[in-house]
View 1 (cartoon, helix red, strand yellow):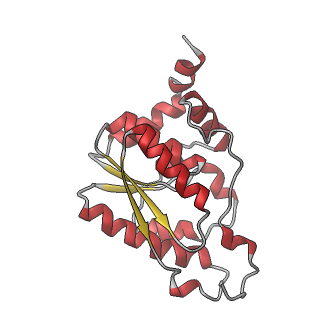
View 2 (view 1 turned 90 degrees about the horizontal axis):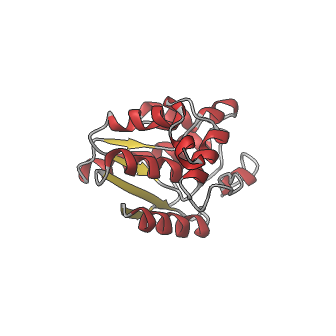
View 3 (view 1 turned 120 degrees about the horizontal axis):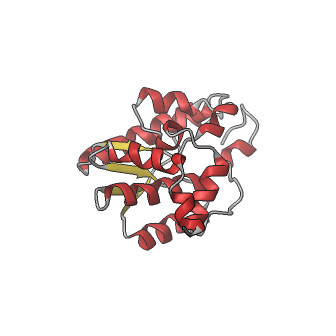
Length: 190
């Protein structure tokens, strides 16, 4: 068995595929980063053409991530929609729970598009390691019933990186990239 085949046969990757196969179709919130890239590639393997990638463009998104999402979706032959959205009004003064308000606004729109496109579910790239940080946006994902297959499969960053490498995803060794708004102190006008 090759190293690639061995990695993809691991229980963690198989759990991820099982969770995805339980969905008739899925829209993946694809930022172009490591986590969502692996999720999209796994969804493509699990569900074939029943996958849609959704990428949000906002004034605070890095343009190289948008380009990476476009390249990845073309590489995987996945249908892709890019949505331009304004800065959510609820975060203009950068409150401590900014991530909650932002995710709530963005994922509500993504959920609307998911339904309009006929997809059964919307999924994001949250993973086990995200539970160790202050992540108020996780509450918004729960409230909106967003699936987090990487988290549901109990995958952390090390496994995600290994599987992305095995799948030859160009972002497999990309360093973590936090939201640009995290660089501003809370209470600072955006």
